[in-house]
Length: 341
Ligand SMILES: [Zn+2]
Image (cartoon, rainbow, N blue to C red; front, side, top):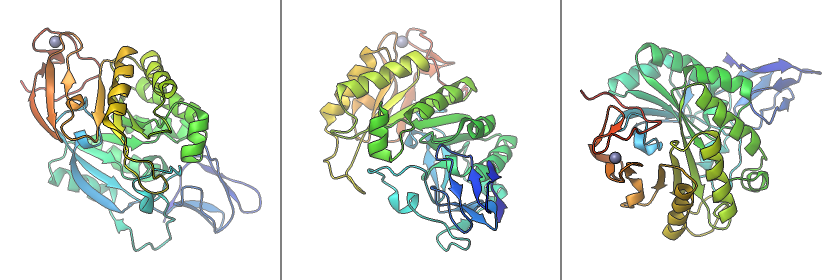
């Protein structure tokens, strides 16, 4: 079993986990709030190290990342547990799970095997996704280091629920940070996720960008929860002013599940959110989870022409060349791609 990082001994054989804002103090034999870090005889262990619940080869657009090597393939892997308790979680059977020492739901996959599988499937990217990668740092660090050595990029698909000291280390091998910001008030976070941690998540977004990582923001719009003008106006302004106008913002359609029964997000709500974001200065606001919606396409902020046409997860011709619009030479900021020529 793998000893965890980011913890110290506390009194009476308890341990103090310092990985995420919960800062759990864990008694002997107990798990942290994430369900995957356990105090065994006064030592904290990472029970899901090198243990995965699912792997798949996905287009990078599915994460979703639209400005990070468009058209490339990501080897996606995830495990058990989460440190938030979102009422609308689409993966709650995995995220609310508690890992055991010999967990039959988990399959062994060493860092070496993960990278070998990614290469075998011709992936350019490793994506740590499905459950919350912030609670899996020991495995991600080992895997991401190996992946980098073999020329692969590393992507975290995350809620950003992690302490800055741990994030700083994870970012050393992170190439893209796909961040789910669920709304724009601590009250919303408390009600929807169980934790009022928006401030830390916003700070983490800035840290990720400043580390040199690519970043895109995702907000799943839930009717009556986070779709008010105040929420959308506040969040889009914050992205423009703190990360930059060229950071992509994905507003995605919610579908009922787990503990929420509100109907799926109306397309008008998504269109309105997109308009608010664009009006506040964001250059790229994408509409997600609505097949065929024109808001999936990348438009040039200079001339307005379509630069990348998306149908589902497949791409039409890419009209961005060497980072410039091929029609008007406008520079597309915060965009990375393999050079075709
Ligand atoms: Zn243009």
